[in-house]
Image (cartoon, rainbow, N blue to C red; front, side, top):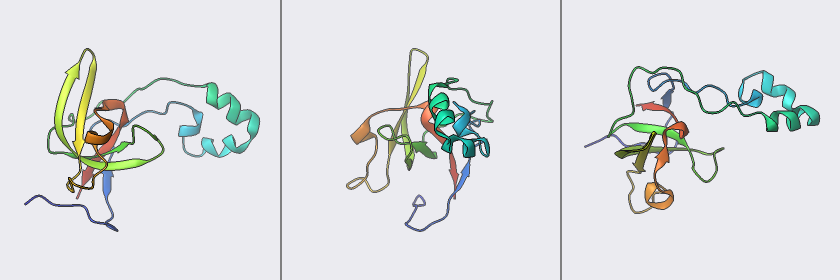
Length: 125
């Protein structure tokens, strides 16, 4: 039987195994984001977008891995799901993620395939 994540369980998110994501704007950098409470800086920062970049990782996500990723509908929300399928279209790698509670899970059956740029890291139990 595979291990399950239960409510209240603390998770260790390994952001380096797949390669750490680099910030897409100033507000994503710790400590510097404290200055974005100033309206003029926040407006200027909203116009910044450095595109998606990731450091080299030790491995790629594979089927069976439990990952933390940004919700496709609200990128401020993090979700934890298991990778069940991987497909590549053009230059994009897409992941189909499913929860262990299949009847009541908000997963890829609801929001579809997930882009690689949304994966934050691997969960180590």
